[in-house]
Length: 101
Image 1 (spheres, one colour):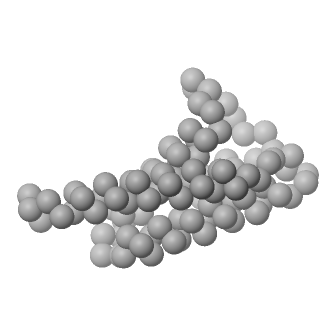
Image 2: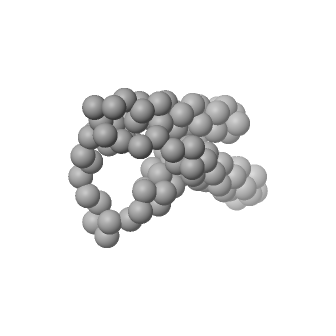
Image 3: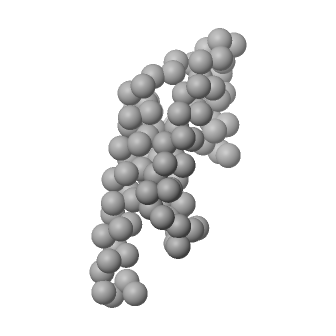
């Protein structure tokens, strides 16, 4: 919910260090992927990735609303999906380790 609200605000608050837009997308979706994998350990990682991709697409669609004065960009969606996929790939590797069981 926090990510959706921040992405929908006409003037979101500044983050310390002022990371670029793509970095913010990467941080948000890597975090969401890690939290999703932890919250639903039996869920398919592919399903989690599809859900996160759909959520990223929803954010970009919302940002098309003119009064929000936001920019929807396909590059943002690609950054979202890449970050989620990378994190879920790490989760998969971690889960396969014998000591993780």
